[in-house]
Length: 418
Image 1 (cartoon, rainbow, N blue to C red):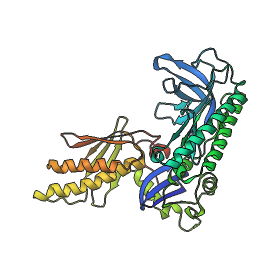
Image 2 (cartoon, rainbow, N blue to C red; image 1 turned 180 degrees about the vertical axis):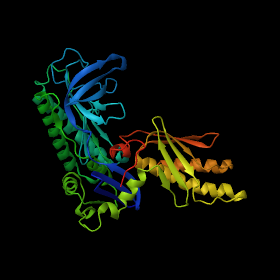
Image 3 (spheres, helix red, strand yellow; image 1 turned 180 degrees about the horizontal axis):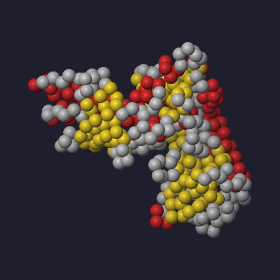
């Protein structure tokens, strides 16, 4: 299996496109206009007991939602005589999710700082290992050694910053997550990286305890760095970019050899054209998607759900006993295209798909089985619920960030203009 990641600019947006065996699998807008994963000194503006949450201003005139049920270990930067946020409190928060419709940003005290092989996390006690490599004997031994180093680093944190945070009632300790690509690293590299992350976290706390409201104390690396670090463990992987800043950041922050990182310089043929990124984005921003058979999808996003209608279009339906089988073949093509479009558009929530009608129940069952098999390829959780008596297939997809349209600055039913 060959994986290729392309990073290039299109329509004033930095785009990452992932291809597996030359088939597009994901499209992401990498510009961090919503400060995702950045860490700020916030001010508690309003406490709403009825929803067990508060609203925190973290940047000039930007407020975020902070749920007490999700955030147990707050990092207060002022003296406290109780354990819950109060109006006026100075608090350290990380931006987790962008605003959506009428909802503000989501904020968290579970600070996370990712790097090549490790993630420093306040939501972890000790050292956790990625499920993909948890049975690797070397990694298990490294985790034990890293746990010892972690204990020493947390003790150092208390010695150096304990006095500054003495009356804040804040827990400062953290843990590590060993990422799947660490299987290609050495223990020395892991310990060196752990020390780097420890020092980064320590500097964040030092800056924060003496900082002013709304100060950004940590700026996250671009999202494509995390994406690359997830992919480098794959044997046949290559990254191509024509963006000098992206190339430099990847070279310095990802364990990627020169043979797998390529800078593209052909000015006559833009990178977004060479890999059909323009075509794929344009298609993913349109209501109508044509299929090779001549049939087409109509994708309508509403406030409550997304509806996908499969139309026969230019496809010539057979008659008689072959009608169901020919419709089945189109429905299989439409099923694959639907799941691809949900993934590329990053559509979540409830999705209803109206396939071309088939009377044969066995073919309907086969269609559902095919959908369930193909849905496993989506990195985001997708559930094929069932087919109703009217032949409508119900799908749910876990929400992860904004839709492609939102990231491209378009309204729900607006299309990109040439």
